[in-house]
Image (tube, rainbow over the protein chains, first blue to last red):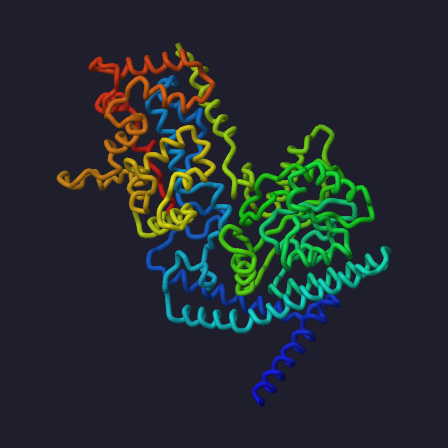
Length: 436
Length: 173
């Protein structure tokens, strides 16, 4: 009996602390500086760990950390087909032509540009999480001790805290938006809906221990515009709504997600599609056009890649969103992988284990850059416009651009690409005479 | 091959192994977009699978990849009585030969050459043109007049080509 009462007291104290220190400030939009202090401690610890790791490695490493984005296993030979084959003595067909294709094939088998984007980025230095400990071995006792402390802190302290916050955040989001949804349409409703969305976003961001740096806030998306961003995880939406209200676009889900979607759409005109409707692109475009034409509606948030990519590159943008017209506000989101990996590998983890992994990482640290708005030029078609926006986002975020389609995560590549390669080779053979 | 390189290749192997059963099937290879668009992709994939089998384990994977190890200088002077390493010039040439030799009879016939050519050019060159390319190539390389290329003739044709450089993949660390 006494035990139950004591436990009850602890839980009550816990909730009071959480509400007072975290929920209330988020409602008011102020920060108490607790997370900044936490981040400072974290950064210092990880720096110390990196130094110890470097000392512990026996072999001398001449060029360790040159370019963070250029980690590769093998030296890829990027000479184009023409140069490579034409370099040979005569450019008519020779048995040795096969070497070019053979080597390209093997290079692709060992390491290719595309599939590596669908799995988590490799870290340069261990960040004291078990899950990233692939290439690093036991170094010293002190490091292991720090790691153990880290595990205890993360699982026994941070996880329950974050879980509580997430629960509070989600429930208040559902309750709040349902309540606001009962009001008649008008400016009061819009204002309250914004308040509710912002507060709940802030709570959820704190639930992930998120530290977000917003850059160029003057370029923030305006009403009646379309906001496009690169996609790494479902958390992207929360990160962006932390700083402003958007109308979201997405597929209708079941379960908890579905409840949230149904609740929020009452308060704020989000656009949720049935799966069958997504296939009907004209319907999608039509609804989006209606939304954009109404200048008093919140900016739409779209992720044109269509799927989660691992935040090292930006893949092909689907042109649908760029055909609608209106002003495009590009946003670049770059996560810092040292503190936690935000990428959702949906073929490997379902949403629940993904959220658990996020909640047991150190933190989510990211940079959000608002880029100046873009409009489609007269002589540009949707695809070129999409590529232009994509370049801007990639350039700002320090990501590489890939011409491949994110859909390759699940689907096979189209035969047209192979046919293109074949065409190129044939052109070479025929061009250099001696055909018949 | 160093320990860290083997570890990386193993993690590559496991990331390709979607079925997580310790072996790769042909579909696993075809999921690599850059390989799928390679005109000779199917032949290359075939090289991994021994006769009649549909699965390759890590050992087989490494064996086939070993053909592409660059030839180290100090290896050239190693003992002559041991078995020849997989990445010797001769074995690299043999590997390429097998890519042409579809029925594995140790000869590249005109038909086989035609089939491989067809894979490389797709639909862009007519049968007659392709036929004459094949004829000319065989004529130039064929020394014993049997209208097919044996391995020895193959080696002779390529004696001036820097096979080591063309058929090698270097690791960055």
